[in-house]
Image (cartoon, rainbow, N blue to C red):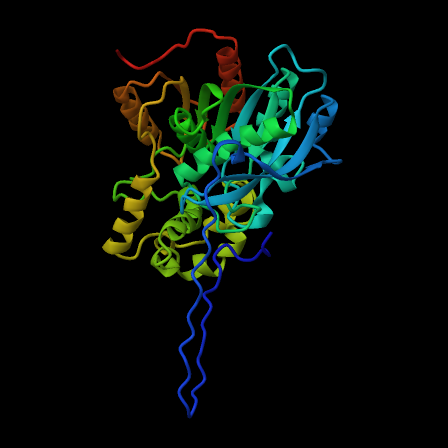
Length: 393
């Protein structure tokens, strides 16, 4: 695990001392690209450790938690990489056919290693999507995502990386808990909503050997292409998301400069503003209130176009999925405009997807009340209850 530091690492400047005699030019060795895992290598366990300290809810239900590191595919390079996560097992014995399993995509926690949910008993808040499934006799696995808690830079919002992480987490859990069956579901919030949506789209080709029953995307970051559009209000939550968006852009395009997106007082306080906590937490809102919105906005048309093109490249949907989807929007969401999500659902419907769109008039972004809706919907998929699509046929 690399050492932790500021959200945006400082550039390293190398000065060559002048010499009276010529010297051979040094050549940096090309980075080694590890081959992508194939077949049984996907989800292969690198390390695992049963955790002695677990969340009080997990302990009350008699469940266990195991920290894992597993092999997966790098969504940026297409090579191989590792991801960490946590596997939760309910009390009791597996039912005939094996435990059902749910892969959870967590919302944004941060972009440095100390923000990996697996380091915390409560998964930095994501435990609320774990215990309801444990109570229903379901194994749960929560990935940290590529580069968060493992070597390498986080591939923030990279849809391929997220899909691989979510799917291979299921394979990894099956390697740790042999009594897990092949039927699995996915549920995620915000960033995790985009992750499980992407996993549903890739399940047909990348999820071979597994049977996905459905994916529930709660307040998903499905399509943020209009994030910096002139008509988009730059709310405090949106300002606070900009450093994360820059990190995702920079992972895909290392030539992107932070100063093109983050400046002034915002840049001076970026480490504190992106500390591991709820994106909409009071401390961040208070800090954001004294910031100039112009300091968290592209400073040129070229910078804006570069960001918009990257946001387009990570948006979902991209292709038809054969499994049902639940997409939940809170109409009071001031981070992800509900209309952006409705438009993404309309695109999915046009592709032929089976989507149930749930609109919650009193909910904001990724509220706890949404968890119960997602859990109940996914349980119905395991029980083969017919879906209630809202797509017009």
